[in-house]
Each structure stands twice: as C-alpha cells, then as structure tokens.
Image (cartoon, rainbow, N blue to C red):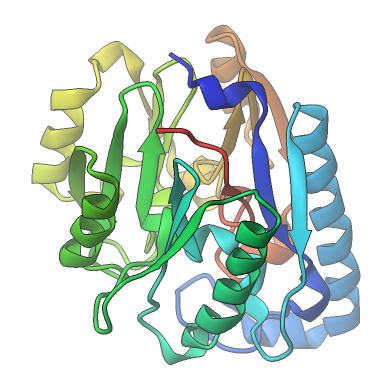
Length: 287
C-alpha cells in the first residue's frame, strides 16, 4: 500500500543548535549523562542530525529545516508540534510545562509555511485539549485512517478533536508504559501495509483493536532490544525505512519484506527519548 504523496515527500526538521538534555519528563531522559560531556554530545547530535537529513534526502525526500529556540531543547522533535494532512496543520498542545513554550514558535514556523505556499491553514486546538502532534496521531496512508495514541501525554479527547478537524476514521490505542509515552515510539505503519509495533506498550483492548485492522501476517512484533533502541520510531519513505541502529535480526526481517534499511547512530537524541520519527514531520500527506 502507498500514498500518492509518497512520490514527493516533504519533511520538516528542526536544527539542533539548541538541543540538550536539561530536564527529565520521560524515563529515557538522562540530563546527568548529557552534562558529563555536553560539548561531545552537542557535536554528536549535530553529526546525527546531518546523517538523518542526508538519509532522508537519499531516500527521495525534500527536507525543510527550521530553527529551534533557546531554552526549548525538545523543539528538535517536530513530530510533536502538529498533525498535518491535506495541507492543513492542527497544532499540538503539550502536557508538560517544559514543552509548552514550543507552541508559539512552532505556530510561527507553520504560519511561515503557509506564507510560502507549502501549507494552506494552521488550526489551533482549544485550551486544555492535550494532544502532542503526530507523535500520538499517526496517519496510515494505505488504510486512510489515523492511529491515535493516548495515556501518558495526549488524551483521547485531544486525539478525537484533531481527527474531527480532518473528518477521518480513527483507531484509538491506549498506551500503558511511561517508557513508550508517545505512539510513535512503539507503532509504525510501513508503506507496504505492515506495522511495526511493540506489544507490551499497549493495553489488551488496544492490542485487540490493532488485530481487528491489521492482518496477522502484516503485524511485526518488535523485540525489547529493538524497541529500546528506538527502532520503531522510524520514517518510511517508499521502500526505505530510516531508523536508529537496528539489530541484525531486524535488518534481515525488513529485507525479507522488501525494504531497504538505513539505520543511523541517533544516540544523542535517544538520551532525550526520541528517534528518527520524532525528529521529522511529514508535511505532504494528502489524505
């Protein structure tokens, strides 16, 4: 399965100039480790960012890079900024105060994309409506629906509010692990219809819901090791899957399914609880 938008992917990234790990709002965040070698981690983060940007370009994507803002280190994860479909962006509302400051600069950036003709409209959710962008609202182009995560960060009401803006079917999935706090950390639809997922991250009812929509032969359960490496947090462009460093077993599995794996050392960003998908936001899905 594929989307017409797969032909010319347009992906937003945020420059990592202001990235650091200075607080902890998820179990992966290790500010002490970062502080022990801040200069080294900053250099590694720059190299990892450029490697990811280059891999996306080599896979056929056009990458737009926006600046970050001082004091807002997690702006490097624009997947959480908005849900974008059909040239409309519905802006996120963050749960934690540490990230709420991102809302205004991200909105300004998206309004700039409208001015440049890359988007048509920017929509704001009502106050008190918690929803953290594409990290918890994944568009499945083949099935033409949204997979909506809720629990640690976004609320189910927030996910439903976003999807009402687009008038699309949703499949709500309850997340039950603080380690997998956004849906994109434990669930990834691929272009051929397969779905990478980490079963322990979901409630039993949500696992049942996944299996009602995705055929067993298309479900690829990930190991604890690959989930902890942030491999599920992947970007799929056509038959190329870009992710953090994978185990050899996962590489062989994807190859057997006809995918080309591009795995990268994204360890500086994993110190903050993010991987390849978190660092990107697709702007071109047509719906």
